[in-house]
Amino acid sequence: MKLLWSPLAIDRVAEIAAYIAEDNPAASEKWIRAIFVRVGQIAQFPEIGRHLAETLRKDLRELVWGNYRIIYRVESRQVAVLTVRHMKQILPIEEVE
Image 1: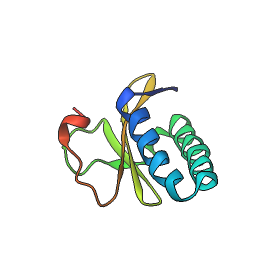
Image 2 (image 1 turned 45 degrees about the vertical axis):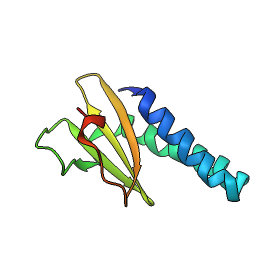
Image 3 (image 1 turned 90 degrees about the vertical axis):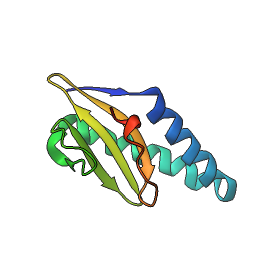
Image 4 (image 1 turned 180 degrees about the vertical axis):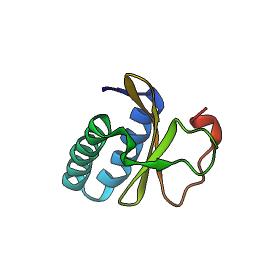
């Protein structure tokens, strides 16, 4: 399947990486590489994540990875990463709909 990243998801990854880099730039780079590898697995196995609890939509899923939720939408020929959120953050529903 084709993998797409929304601008919001890219921005969220950049924000998280910048936060990590404040204390440990090397850890930030490692985190960025790791999240892209993990998201690449979603393209191969789109059903790997669970249904998103905040909505009844069956096309929206989340993959919990460490302290983060990778929120994505499964479409017929592609997977779209919508956002990345820390587990302690409330997910604004407008980020996924």
